[in-house]
Amino acid sequence: MAENIKHFPVNWIDGMKINKKHFIELQDNVEDLIRDARNLEVNELNYGLLSTPLSRPFNYSISIDTHNELSVNIKMLKAITPAGGRIEITDFTGEFSEKIELKDLDNKENNYFLLLNVDPYTRVPSGEQNMEEVPPRFPHALSKYHLTSVAESEVNHNNIGALQFPIAKFKASTDGGYEIITNYIPPSLTLNNHPSLISLFENYDLFFKQLEFYAIQINRKIKFRTNNEDENLIANMVFDVCDKALRFVELQISKNKWINYNLKPIELLDNVITLSRTIKNSFDYFSGDGKEMLFNYFSEWTDITSGDYERLFTDTINVKYKAYDIDPIIEQAKDFMTKLDQLFSILNQLDYIGKKRDAGIFVNENILKNDRKTSGLFGSDSDDDREAPSSPTFLAD
Image (cartoon, rainbow, N blue to C red; front, top):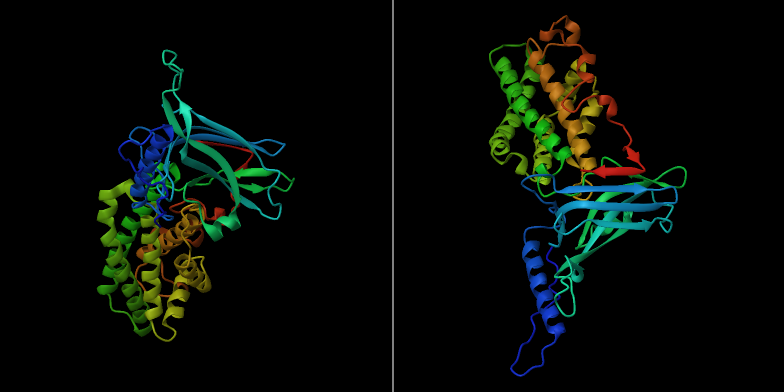
């Protein structure tokens, strides 16, 4: 969304008296035009941490003491806000530190975001003072930064401000204090800007490659075997699902290889959600009791019920993308990829598609239900209902 340009060019005319105010207005206009140019490439869904050639674009620590005073020390942060405001805190600018009191927060709210606000039109003197000038002055000026906190419900309603950047999320604790949610992922322009997003891409890339392999193997198994009528119905439905999944996945694998970690988080997650919709539409296409029969067949070989399969696809398709709070959609995508990987892995190991489990059929690799539950692309399934980890202190580096 394009923010209004509020600082306009100075109307220079011959003979006018020039003072400091005119040059400040000129600088404000230039800064606003540059911000507006950046705004063409970013928006409320696509902003955040910027890539750096040598290190991660952030290094900061946050702590909350027993008196509910929140302290922040930022050694490095390179980011862009939804409206194109640049945050640049490095060794060249010096560290940023600030403390805010949390005593005035609404106790009815549970979760809050900590926002770093940048004001490019209010400048803070910087650099080493030149004593040879008269009067002595600091040679440079930097944008002003300050911290604010906002309730999660308010952010969900109004989104993040044009010149704000969320650096942390914290919650009210049972003892009346506050704790920092340590697995919070700030908005990021690309996946290579945060270790959690890098890990997500590695598992996502592996999942797509594995799914391609499984789909080919399963369909090959179906194509060259003649089954009875019921087995044939299930096999035909599985073939159709695998075929549609394969057609989508094969279009993404080359892009994953070429663009790699430079994918945007929204692009990666959109691919997962679109895959879920593609497969669900394949299920919905089956008339009569076909879908229920297929889900029941899947349930025979996995620990997931027919209803849970339906909810898995529905929940994944309906998830909302919020750049300022990406963890919920990541967890949903992880759950979907893990369970789909388990399902296709088991189908791939069956002697043939369509035979009932209770008919004495044996499968390759001695598949046992519980073997697949304890591990997967993203580790143990026992963490599915975990509470977000929190702590009075947090170090992001």
